[in-house]
Image (cartoon, rainbow, N blue to C red; front, side, top):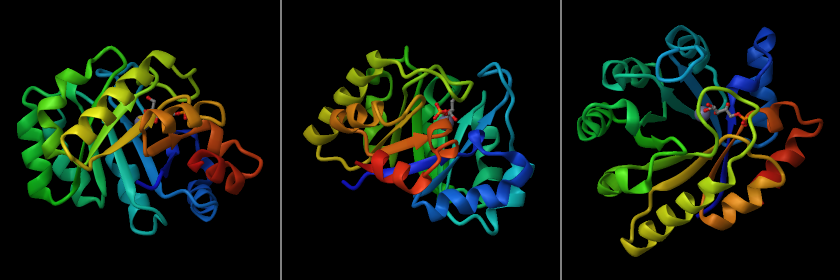
Length: 215
Ligand code: DX5
Ligand code: ZN
């Protein structure tokens, strides 16, 4: 599978958001990663529906929504209607994981499910044949610019092994602390969508950075 780079908007300069989005798109980023935080599931509050509404019409990349919010089923319809390409919700935040998957399918968006560093792959494995993407958090969700947790690599390996064993084709995304050093590690473990915030948005040469991440 080709490796995709999803640029995490959390690290953008919000004073000039549309220029920032064009800059990473021109550098070759495949998707825009849109981190929604509610101050309950994670400590911080980021941005949500009004911001997505204002960017989606001319966003130069498909929008990869990462919901770090409690009770995701209440909100997915709004995000789907506002032009999300993928919607990824946290397994730990959903009362009924299967119901959220079904709802996303009905809405016609790609279905992603995410696990925090402490949540084992076994918690989401039963849903592997119903998803388009598994997001393995490589830091504790909540903030950009954190240090990659190497113990999460095993989970990526496990997910990739199960995917191969079962002949499935969902993508495996990693998010948090991805840079020139950690990208080869996650790619080797089997990840094929690399989220990058700080490393990409702060790069002097974003085009070279996207290439480096893609490997
Ligand atoms: C963290 C977010 C990430 C974050 C990644 O909770 O889900 O998407 O923006 O940022 P970096 O690449 O700076 O670790
Ligand atoms: Zn994210």
